[in-house]
Image 1 (cartoon, rainbow, N blue to C red):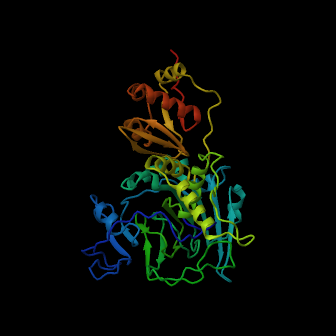
Image 2 (cartoon, rainbow, N blue to C red):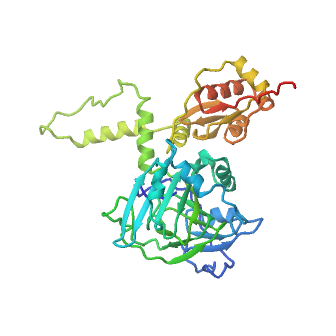
Image 3 (spheres, rainbow, N blue to C red):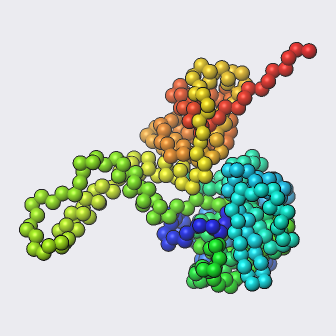
Length: 437
């Protein structure tokens, strides 16, 4: 996932870091040693093991690396076989609903061109032999094997994981030096890509004004590595980086959602405003006589501040309801489409008994929060009461078969049926029965 088209850089974003501590130990020759004297932002290199895919315990990664410093993990996905081919990605980029882009670079003159998909198949026959990249976002919503990569990141809150973007680049292919405002894990799936980064917090981040892409005007790397299949580079927000294909390669980018404080403020204000009665207005009983026509005096500003402070104050329940809905709507690519006909409880039960299953729509984001002894299940902006067991199950990619649905409380079965009728879950067709010979 790379910010190459329209990702505005904003100064304040959601931050879930924890206090830093020094990292001790050693790293492979292609990275700096982890010592107490290492700057808190400096890049690290580790080698994965079967028990520690990040090359360190997860707790150490979250405490000392997450949102703090880049980390290159050699062999993070040992023996990885890319779950899709370049041809698969090209075919997906031709789908009507695919979010696809082509970036073409002409080294002579340093000219860049951005093309938005979906693409016609004929486009790929017109591309040059080198220096172009195809990018498709949300590939995990289209391909179950790509979606399975997300399971390796279940140590992070599920609502924070955004998508798996896949890029295919021919030799020299790149999207230019840029900065993302979210965490990203760059997993090499096929071929080799050279990554250069600058881990200096003071590195310049001004953008060029002569290209459509948000490319850095100046980029001087502090580290360079060539990633082989299975290697993975983690980058926190704000780290300038530049990836260039050494040969035809696939890269899987597992990106995080990081709404800006501005986006959250605007959405929260709108959420509260919808709940304020029309008659609640600015008031000024007992004001002093005006002394200068047109002046907004200090007392008026004080009353405005008090009115807004009161209106924007929210208790814990209100904040939870808003943020759960916001988090499951934020950066949603598509809306759920309800089935042509609503299912009633009897038909729902009949289809389950015949062997149908219920699966979650991959485009519908889900999350949950504790609510008393139960839970609130958030689905694409909706806030629905549910049991904790059902809320947890609904946030997995598992299917609900007849036995699983039968084990649910009656209220949870009704909730699942409601979600099916809204299009956030779907019923598979029962298997066909073979006729007797």
